[in-house]
Length: 169
Image (cartoon, rainbow, N blue to C red):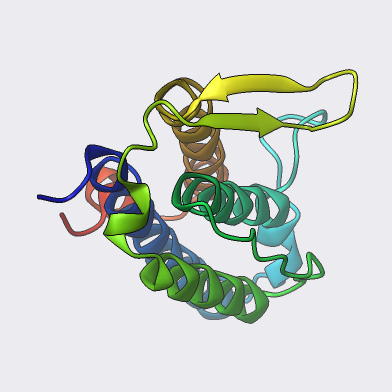
């Protein structure tokens, strides 16, 4: 039997990142078809104090790698954060999905009670059990950034809906 920690993380992350990848491809095609400068979408924000689309995607990818790495007990892969185009974001998601494919479900066995330390050695250090980390921190953070990326594109006229957001399941 596969660990619930794996079942409730990696397949969910992959589903949503694959859907996000498809939405970004649609956005790129939309920009081309409508003669919209891609940066108009990539730098779009829902509100001035929020991150732009490009950063929302980067953070969603970062959280997905962080969740999988921490729960699997493997080194967190670091990828550069210098994406500037839709193609760069696609490459980031391809790398992230490849990492998620590389973790083995058995690495998640018994991780419900393992200690996850966030921001170690800083005044903001926080220690959580694996279960609390996944359910109350990692997944909510991930979904916030995926949803915000979707919302930015929808707000900017992309004809996408819930099926696009959810992807294949």
